Image (cartoon, rainbow, N blue to C red):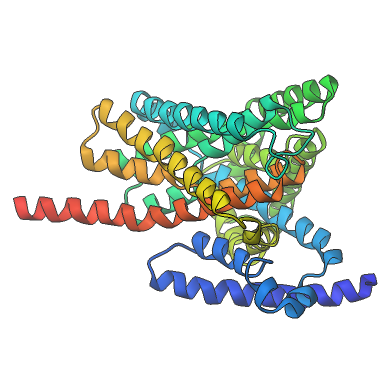
Length: 416
């Protein structure tokens, strides 16, 4: 296809993607599910797992192979901006406020699922349909462990906010534990990506460059960025010029961490953490979030869906493996975090809620899996298995959390 044809087709793709995501989103909303869940499912529906089977001609026309690099590039822009917004909401003070319980829950949510994932990787290593031939046992262990340990921190934060629990004991603990959990998982992933290059110099550049970047932005850059916050507070609004400057910084951060072979989202997230809070952060969220979440981010879900091929799970053994991964993921994350919260002295109801929220993988899991598939660490079959696990654990989060909380409120009302 010519560049002109690809350009024309791209606008039709965008309309199709947004329409399907909106339709699935309305159905998911009626079922009490979040927008993230609906877009995860919509991405799979538009891929070869459903549309490619039912209407192969439509699928081939809507998503020709030549258009994939365009969808990928646009999705990375949306993903970087979204992770910047996640960093903008990251509150270090939450960790300090509930340090003891947060560390206990976070450690349980990392160590147990990581250990289970590591054991799973060792048991499955050597199967060419799951791991790339270039992947070493250590890389397989680290990647699988990290992917089993991740938490859907943005979704967790959204549920806490929507329920009005942001300033409560439960909300503070869940957000603190979730943020620590994801920070550890991303660090493990950075080590995997650095080592997968097969070149020690690349590994040193990636890890060392990431540490230097984080230090420069958070230590040296944050005080300078505070001046931007002061200007916005004084003027009462953010100018177009300042918004352009902030977006330029996000893109530079994404470029730097991508160029040192970590990943673009690292740079965007760290840049978000360094930004001033207050009116400055509120202005950024107000301007960026609608465009990012409703227009750009669905492209990432579609790109993930186009790489998800449920048809690869073509035997009873593969479906048993998928179920096993789901059970291990839920036991390692949800049950372990529940137990850690109880041992830290949290009430049973709050411990159940924390375990439920921590067990959700959501968008963060898809990011890790796409990185692994793109860099050649895993194969499409394992990618599909892990996507199925991510969708199911994310589907479980909202209804189980609501059930735990409604049940708790009913019990307290009866007692009164």
